[in-house]
Length: 551
Image (cartoon, rainbow, N blue to C red; front, side, top):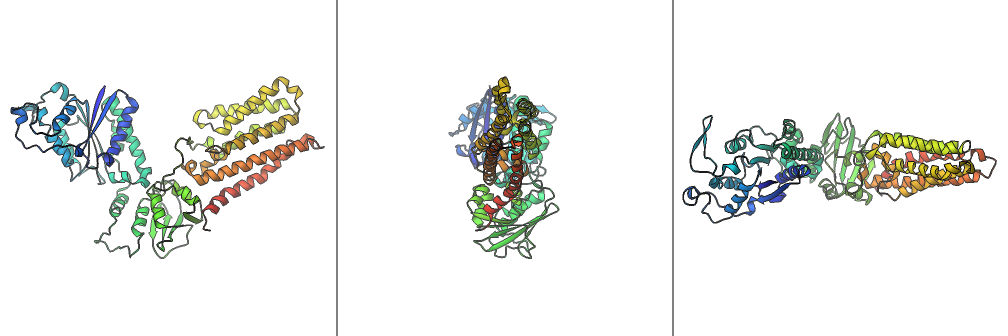
């Protein structure tokens, strides 16, 4: 069993940004090994007095400090641990004060004698070398500066002297303050995942691969954007610059929003977003062109999209305290113009937005096999059933079964969605019921069964968290579409409309079977698909815009 001791030197204890990294690292460790015992000590919560250099721990009570505080108990845990994680933010180019005090108070683990260690280096030998020499050390640190160079050299040199050059691991996170900004999760999230990978690698090999080290050195955002975000985060004007807020309350907030612009969300986007803060009576424009974003507070151009909102509403949305899609449905803000820009905003165009749809539901991968193009292929078995039902009822069952089975075999696993599986199940059951007695079933029975089957499949989907149409149309609506309540509601209505259309088709086919058009009873109802497709194209644009526009 590996005993891991986390020494947290942050005054913010478990709420520190450094501990976010530690938690990701330990999550990676736990993924690989369950045979670990992890203990975290928040040093700021402990009574640890500074070392006064009396050396009683060497002469009077060897191995035990005479000071009456909690350090002797902590020293036992320190000696017994197999892996020590030193968690500290960078303070004045060094470790925090309490961590420095802790380090100084580890003096009892050494003997007083001075030994040469080679290369002109001298040091004190360990009192218990069998426990101390094989101990592993990992430094995990955050800093509010944009680079490791010229900032961490003092800490790295100290750890080299303490534990041996190249004999300890490290994760040094620059631009660490961004870890605390929820709207930048799309930048910081991948980094935390990489820290988790580092934890897996470390517990497996007791080292972090160079490729992962290189990834962990990279800043979250470009230095220019970071400096702007960092400087704006203090909420005060830089009096050294001529630019002022001009008495505008939301000016600094909008500058932060502009600084968080992420061109990777929608490369090549050209648009003008106007923010109208109705409570402040202030308006701003964010002009996006050639992957650059410019903030305007006057001399406006024609807006592509306008958002009308109270300042506090939008502030809460960007802080992750309010779901933007739920707020839109509740008319807490409204939108005019090109509504498609809202998908880009939800995807993190100006920082991550938190969507509060239940976490348990499956989020589908955005791949070609879950697009409207693939949906057309999934409808082929149904069309075959309807078109062959009159001429060859047997083939109207068997061919769709083979085609739907083949499509499911191509997709496999997590790519399969509700309609794929329901289609295969329906034709399997239909074949099981009809094939042994196929001579006794006429084409109308097969056709009507098909119409009722597809109606039931679509109608049941209305009550699912992710409806049938949403399984496919999310491909065109951003990576967070399946967490977007407005998108899901739009598709719930669409799915219901199509379910009713299939029901009408079935009833129409049943009626045509009693007329001279009996030979075309399953084919003629397909004409209803045309107005259905026209309605779908119109409704997917109209309904979100209708729910978003001002009353």
